[in-house]
Length: 235
Image (cartoon, rainbow, N blue to C red; front, top):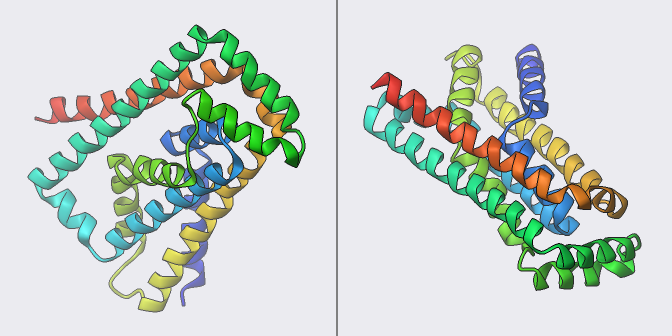
C-alpha cells in the first residue's frame, strides 16, 4: 500500500473539503435551519456522493463521460439546472421569511426552548408548520444530489486521480484511497452538521436565516451560470 500517495490524496482532499462551494453552502443552510438528524443525513449524503465520484474516477467511468461530448454536455446541463433550481429555491425561501416576520418570531421562540433536549419536538413542529421542515431522507438526498450533480466535482476527482493514480497503483491502495476520502468527508461534514445544529448556534443565526438563504442562493446560481458560460464559450 502506497502510504505517501494516500497522504497526498488526504491533503489535497482536505483542502478541497474546507474550501467554500455548494457542498459547504448547503451544509450551512441545513445545519443552521433543520434538526440535527437531518443535518447529519445531509453530511452522509454528500460523503456518499463523493464516494460515488471516487469510484467512477477509479474505474474509468468518469473518463468515459468526460471524453464523450454528448454525455459530458448532458452532465453539465443537468448539473447546472439542479444548482440553479436549488439557488432559486434558496432565494424564494429568503423572500418568504422576510414576508413572514411573525412566523419567524415563532421560530426564534422554538430555538430558545430548544436549548435543551426537550425543545427538539417543538423544533420539528414549528418547522413543519412553516413548511420548511426537512426529513432526514430529504436531507440525505439534498446533500447527495448537490455533490453528485455538480460537474465541477466530477472534473475535480477525475483530474485528481488521473494525476496521482497510475496503472501501477495496487487495488488495495485504490480501495484505501476511496475509504480515506469517504472518512475525511464524513468527518468534515459531520463536524459541520453537529456544530452548526447546536441549539445556541441556531438561535444566534436565526435572525440571519434570510441572509444565509440569499447568499447560498447567489452561490448556487453563480456556479450554475459559470457552468453554462463554459458551455457557451467552448461551443
